[in-house]
Length: 324
Image (cartoon, rainbow, N blue to C red):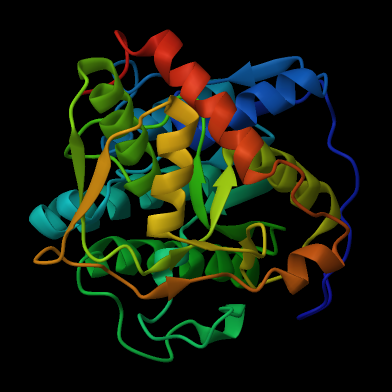
C-alpha cells in the first residue's frame, strides 16, 4: 500500500463472514438490511445480552470463533444533549472500551476491511461551515458532548494507527445526524429528531394544546436517513481506502425550528409549538462538507420529507416495543 494514496480496494466477497457490531441499533440495523439486499450470505451479529463488547475477553473469544473477514463497527453508547451532559464518564469510558476491544481483537484475527463509525460531533463547536475533514482538532469541542467526541476521535486515531502499523485497509466514516428505523426514541437518550417525533406524536394522540422544545430553534442541523448511511458505507468499503476519515452526509441542513414544523405536519399535530430558551441550543450549526464522499461517486438519495414519513410510520408501528 502506498503511503497516503487512496485507491479502490474492489468488490467485497458476498460469501465472506461479515460482522456488524451493533446490528440492532439505528446505523447497524440499516447496514444489516443493506447487506442482505446486496446478497451477503454470512452476516454475523450479537445482541448486547449475548456479547458485552466492554468485556475484552468475551470479545476476543467471539472474534476467534467467528473470524470475520469484514467488520462494520457501528456499536456505541449514544445519546442526545441531555444524556451526554449528564453521563460524560459513561460516554467516554464505555465507548473507548467498546471500540478498543473490537479493533484489538480484529487486528488479532486479521479482519481484512473494517469501517469505524464516528460522529460529526468530533469537530470543534465553532468549526467553519460546512465542516471539512481537516477541521478536526482545530478548536474546542461542544462541551455538552465533548466526552463522547473524544472517544470517537480516539477511534479515528486507532484506525490510522492500525493502517500504519499493520497495513490493513481500515477506514473511518463520520456520519451526520442520523434518523430512521430502530432509532432511540426515549425521552432521556434520544437525539433531537427522534425526540421531536415522539413528542409531537404523543401530543397529537393526547390532544395536547402545545409542545415545548429546548432552546431557541435557531441552530441548524443536517439529517440523514440511516438507509442512505448504509448505502454510503458499503460504497466506501468497496471504493475508498485512505487514512483520512470521511464525512458522510447529505450536504444540506435545516433549522431545528424548521425540522420541528415538518415533524408536526408529518404526524398531523395542529397545536402550538413553544421554545424554552433557558435550555441549551448546543452547536449553532453542524453541516458537513461531503465533497470527498461525492468524489468517490456517492450522493444521498432520500430527501427529508420522504425520510420523515417513513420514520414516523415505523415509529407508530413499533411504539409499544421501542426503547423508553
